[in-house]
Length: 288
Length: 288
Image (cartoon, rainbow over all chains, first blue to last red; front, side, top):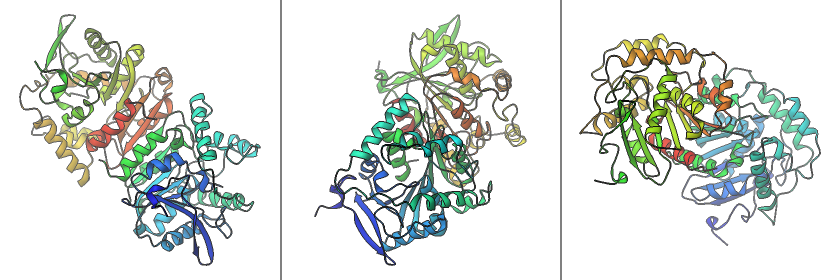
């Protein structure tokens, strides 16, 4: 048996842990010196949607934990239709692992879960990372634009190609980065890839996203309760959750750093993976 | 004579160069491997207002050039009362040094000069850094708030103590960083410090700032002409040029990265000097 540090994102075996009778799939690897960095995934994403290049670079300094929440891919049960319940499942997962302090990263829908998780269980969370993000009840996030619905309505060769349009910009430079990303998530891990999601996931998560987006629109006072240092990042023109929402998050959180990348969309961190890893590592290491 | 790399911000001698009969004071040091990074100073600032800790860290990878523009401290002549003329003088200074390509950093009033410089002479500028910043005709920058005017009206022990209030936040953590900064700029350089500014500087620069702030309010289309990669940084609550202006800059520039630090004000880069140096160095080195 290898020690965790010897595994990469592409080779680490999937493990399972039972939570109230449901089997949760997860992967855990990296340098045990740091606090574990727990990842909360986007709409319809599985463990295979995390960029292995980013995970491996982050794993040099800290343990990485990725998992499928209830009802998603290789985890059992049904996906809840609200963020509060999805957050409770994530909290139960962390408790089941016996972890008492983590750094928590949420991307897109995952950043909704991450915020709720931090509000529910502040003692568990050391630092918070919100990517492609918005506050609860944020600006123009109650529905997607016609442009985004048109992307969702298209057919793609696999579940990954849609990400070329939802996570990246139409510019040549962004699309070049997009195809590199696509190659990493499609081909980085060869054996024992995650299973597909069921048809139950998308409608349940859609309802969860819409519900959370409509809680007290324009009221960001709840953010004052998040005392942790927060790292907020998105792209120049985030078509999924408009970029101004990341600015609103920074302005309303007590202790947040905001970074917006040029030429980019909802998945800015995958367009500039080396820059993202350096900046996130500095944040987690407390560089001032 | 030492080579430039052996000098620090605190030991490098001041040099002088004649531009159309006016003697311009400047200091130049650091690693000649990179493009020179030219600094444009804030309202009433001299060469002594640059943080020696930041300069020395940046100088490991590149040459640093700081100077006093026309009429300021040890440079001769009278300070112009408009940004266009101040920019022309900065351009003449770069031409006099024989430089054909530079990276250009402007802080506060200096970022107005830096934008105008880049519009006038785009071929000279490789990358642009705008700190404590706003677009021309930006949001609520035509006058300072009563809070800021009250700071300007106070008496301070020297020309540096006002910076505790204009560049930093009133929080304990920000003020702790402020006093460290104050110690660096007051005591870092012991011998051959820059001379004081004349009474002509403040009213001329005030007029220049106000004039530039009132050009086509709310019209940011001129930013499309700045094609260079731009690094935009400010603090969570910039009381001199409201923080939202940095967001507006990022959104209207073709290729800009925005960073906003927590708990900070107009001089965010001096509150987090190590973080700033790392992030700026990654930007200048083209990390993606």
